[in-house]
Structure formats: C-alpha cells, structure tokens
Amino acid sequence: MLAWFFVGPDPCCVKLQDCYGPRALPVITHEVTNSGSDWAQLANMTKQARTVLQMHTLEAIADRGYFSSPEILACHEAGITVTLPNR
Image (cartoon, rainbow, N blue to C red; front, side, top):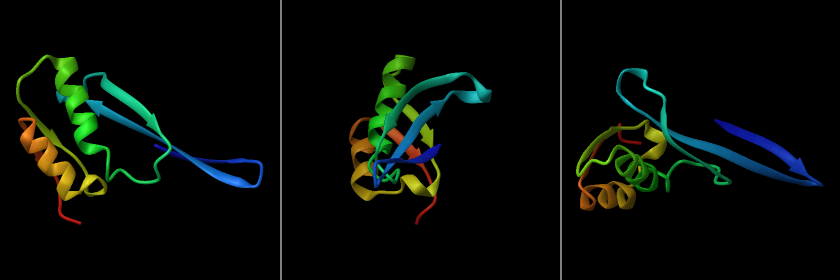
C-alpha cells in the first residue's frame, strides 16, 4: 500500500510493506516506510518473516517492484531463496 499526504507544502510518502504466509494466512510481519519504492525492502522483509516463522531457510515470492541485485544477493547470503520477475 502506498499513501501520499502533504505536510505543509511538501508531499510525504508512506508505504506499508507486508509478508503473508502460505494459503492466505494472516500477515506474518509488516513495516511502514517513507520510501517511494520497494527496491531496498526485499532482504529486510524476508529476514523478518524468516525470524517470525522460526525457519533456517525460506522461499519467498515477490513482485518486480522488489527487484534489486544487492537485495537478492543479501537474501541468498541469508539462506533465503527469492523468486521474482526481472525488471
């Protein structure tokens, strides 16, 4: 979810990041950021989900908005397999 609002004359962006479990389980973890894109959120959110689920490895699926080579590498190094379309 992305929401824009104005604080005085300046626009501000708030973005909700969330992770869902298999078969439409409740939200596993969430975070509100003021980043306008998802590029730098993939490793952070998948690591949070892995911690909440108490798993050593994790397979995550994300949309192309999360595609970032450094983030994908960080996931790989953390034992998280990510499937997402190329930009």
